[in-house]
Image (cartoon, rainbow, N blue to C red):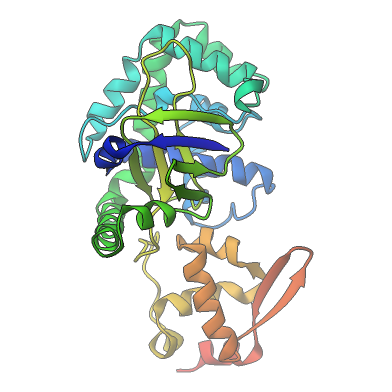
Length: 336
């Protein structure tokens, strides 16, 4: 568990930040979850499939090596410290490319060797990472920044206005909550693994540390549904302010392509029609969320409506619940 101590001044300095680059790096965690699931959903066009395809097609071997290893710490230089409420991608990439060589080397060592005292597990370095390091820290940092830029151009740039709108809506909603109920309710409501008390914030994650903070940054992200934290555990380096990367509230997620017009869509709505059409074979809520670029909670709600309408059946398969069309759903799709 991580504890971030927040005194009155730190609470006063706590604020939201909008970071294009933090959304990019947060999306890369989907590479690890996909590897653990045997590549489930790779045939879809959800966010996980989109990131995997972009990494593969652009041959972003260095980024892939960071997020598919066994270690539990990802170097902090990938998430540069925000300097203002909304950072520009160009400024963030410049910070990555010009990170101090000493900091980069220290963070890479911590990633690979781990730190038992902090609860950080290490892992074996992949060949792509070692080959890039052989070119020196400065060249390594520039290569990381270049690959991040390529991933942005492929998977994020065209979608950023819609994704940014979802981030704005999340911040506005939490600001209203803070005005009505106070900042404590906002902190406690970021994620089930974020707890708040009079000592500060407790984060139920694998790492272990107690960290004082003069401020806390709250960063909404739109790809991953997990909680990620950047707390700069390295001794002797310029201490960075802790950041909590939390999933933004579900919103009108931009799918990869509009739903086709259909009689079913007219009757049950475009989103449910798209989900229903994809259930000609059994699929789980998680798989559908990835394939259709929707929050799992949003998919679960729509599946519940379709199930109650008699358009879906659900069955257990191990620890998963799988949904599939009923004959009535097939008939509905063929009407008209």
